[in-house]
Amino acid sequence: MLNILGKASSINVRKVLWTCHELNLPYTREEWGAGFQATDDPRFLALNPNAMVPVIQDGDFVLWESNSIIRYLAAQYGGQGLYPAEPKRRARVDQWMDWQATDLNRSWSYAFMALARQSPAHRDAASIQASCQGWTHFMGILEQRLALTDAYVAGDAFSLADIPVGLSVNRWFATPFDKPALPAVAAYYDRLAGREGFRLHGRNGTA
Image (cartoon, rainbow, N blue to C red; front, top):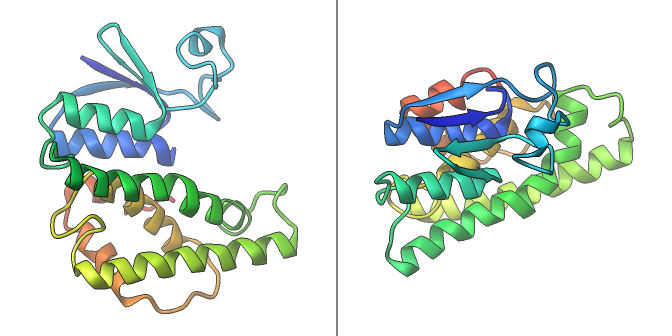
């Protein structure tokens, strides 16, 4: 059986848990990360030298990096509806997954830690303001995309890309600062809430 290493509150672990739900894929999970077993433990480092969750063990196959994990799970376990085989459709899914992992993630990191997590290490006012501005810019890009599709980020149908993007949107709404109205993003957030996997692992009170 698939084994997932990582605490369920981690946004990157939640990508994997939501994907497993969409695939109806059974798994076991071990608690690793802050507050649980430390990821600098030699047993964990033997699986992921980066000391970060999640890691999966699928038989003797070990994989880390959350987006790589969910791509693998969809490809391995019949998730063609989430991750199409046709190259252009797959590239569109990959495009938005990679955008979330790079541009969007980097923009919200400081603001989220300061305003949602109240981190003592994230108290610089200029950095908070810059992060909020950058985050708002990239959410504007998402707003334009969702206004165009009137559905999901890669097109008409829910796809693997909506899992990382949807979790980031959850953080947007959970972080307290003055935000512009983004009606297409708000409608998307409500649309995702119609999926049990998102209610369990995304819009569940955990940012």
